[in-house]
Structures are given as structure tokens and as C-alpha cells.
Length: 96
Length: 133
View 1 (cartoon, rainbow over the protein chains, first blue to last red):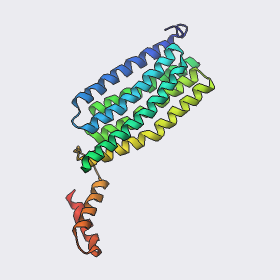
View 2: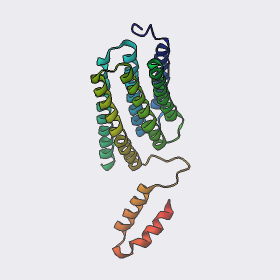
View 3: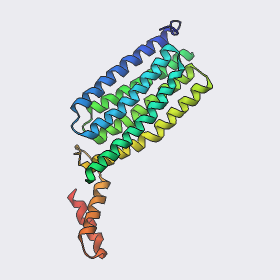
View 4: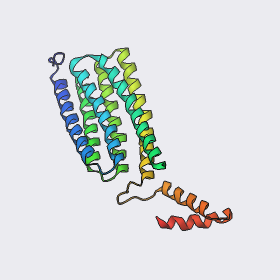
């Protein structure tokens, strides 16, 4: 909003990306609420992490604060840990 | 010129993520949904990272974008593999149209081998048990 006023094409692209990612988040929310099994919801968690990385990158384009790339690195690490933890937990619950 | 390239990469990445979310909603099965998010969402994130690096060409941005790209490329197939394996063990039902299921064949073969006494005739049981699919 502040650093993109001189670039109308990029400003439109940022708005378009925000719109697409918001619609994608609502689609993921629908599958999270109506997912028939637990692995469906874990898949949605993975998708939402990718969407949040995309939102952070679009916000970097909007504001010019490249410090927020650290957040993208941390989320990319944490969601892998979360997926592996869910898989281990479900595997242990099956074996019991 | 750089503005147009960056805008195109950013919009393409966002559209790939939207396609991944539509695939999660529309596809009929856990395994197909996993197929949708593993490729499309990773490609969207990579394209948007390239856009950010093209618009802010500093070396620290490049290093962090490369780190995120490597994490996504290496961890997304591993996570999808583990979730698919666990959901197969849980017995999540498959939809229509699957051609082959090698993990189920392996399970049938191991069950046949543990159930019989003499291990010399396991080849016949292998052929018999694949008919159960």
C-alpha cells in the first residue's frame, strides 16, 4: 500500500493473490469441517501451511519488509514436524 | 519489465495454490487430495518465492528463499508418503478407478506367508491372494 503506489500492475497482482489465497483458505476450511476421516484433516493442515506461506510472501510484496521471510522459513519447518508427528501418533494408535 | 515478470509469477503462484485448494475440495479421496496439495501447493510456493526474490534482489532474501524452496521440495513428498501410508493402515476407503495397490498386495502376501506352514509354495499363494483385490 505504501511501497507499491508507483507500480499499478504489481499492485493489482498483490490484490489478486490475496483474493485467490483467501478463497483457497475458505475451501480448505470447508474440507476441514466436512472431511470424513482424520487424514483428510491432516492434509488440510498441510495445505493451510502452504497458503499461509503464500500470504506471507504476498504481504512481503505489499509492505517491502523482507524480514518476514524468517516466518516463512519457520512455518515450512514446523509444518513438516507437525505432519510427521501426526503420522507417528496415528501409527501408534493403530498398533494398540 | 521486471514489474510484469514479478506480477505474472505472483499471480501464477496464487492460482496454483487456488487450484490445489479446489482439488482438495473436489477430489473424492484422501490419496487424490494428497496428490493435489503435494504438487500444486509446492509449485505455487516456489513461484511466489521466485517473485519475491526478483522484486527484492538482496542476497539474504535469496538465501532464505532458497532455504524455503529446499525445505518444501524435500519435506512435502516425505510428509505425503507418511500420511498416505498411515491412512492405508487405518483402512480409509479408496474411491473408484484405482488400477493398482501394491501395499495391499504386500500385506496379502505377508498374511499368506505367515498363515501357511511350508514356505516353499509361497508363489502359488501369491497368485491366489492377488485375486482378492
